[in-house]
Length: 267
Image (cartoon, rainbow, N blue to C red; front, side):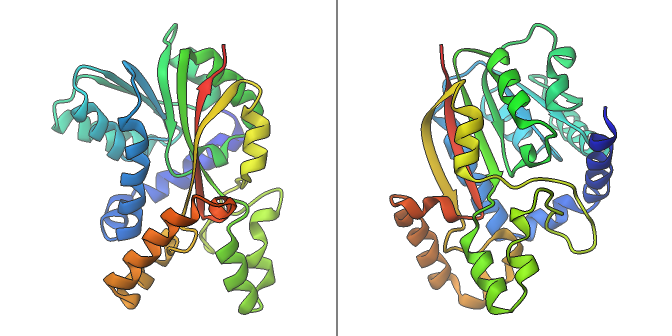
């Protein structure tokens, strides 16, 4: 593992300590995660691979939902691996296989293994050193007609630009446009990169064809503004959530906090 990935691993080793408690207190994270999962329910697969499984919320979910299928996963964090492994043992799950590693190391970790589906929730590929190389790697790892379901932290998150600009905090408003983004926390720096939908299409377009695209938290609050949901009330929050669904039918879908691409491997 390179020095860069060791830094990412260290960040998430610390993050793992309170990850679960923060997640279960955050209604927006739960709502968006369920939306991500919905994109996989319609996929036909026998072997799936998750990049950045964290504490194992989705590995466990899909392994239990599809006991006849195999779910693989990698994560750079040893602490995240530990939490996930504990879940798998507690639930007595035998069709899930996890390891510590980076996307570039998948062929060495899961030797001669092909996947019908590779998925990434909550932007784990934003901390990849060379995304173009990862795209080529994914193409080799996928079986014929295999699918990618990828989510990214969006460079063009319009609401954040507007909100921070109104506060005259221009550095924060445009921080995602820098070559290196420092992550969400003001206290902990995470060397990462935000992408735009256009950049992702350019990187993956040669090896994959687009099946579906979707934006999240366009008008609905971003996950780190969870307190806004309780302040605005259930009715207003649901209105904004439904408004996001409508906006996704327009070109404005690409201005959300996250965006999702479902892609199919080209022959």
